[in-house]
Length: 104
Image 1 (cartoon, rainbow, N blue to C red):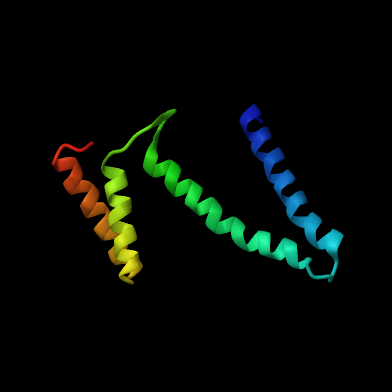
Image 2: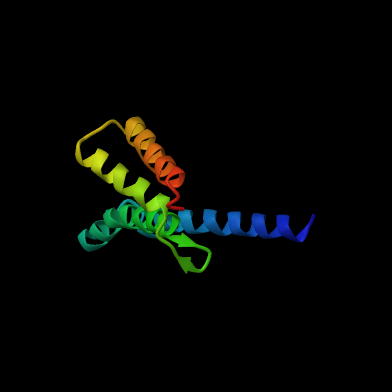
């Protein structure tokens, strides 16, 4: 087995152990209210961080290019309650037009 596969298996085992720790430690008791509020906010915060990183970063640099215009177009489409598939198409079209115009 290569070193890479050993690392993958170790990380997988660690992930399973962490996931199993919650039910084992808590049993059938519900999470405290403060913890539930924090857990509810984790997914949106992580998604926002990933989107911001994908839209504004290029390696170690902060860049403003066509991706940001696509993101802005998607935000407008979402605010207008467009279907998600249409939002993706609008964002891609806006970024493509910006690149054709030479904005990155």
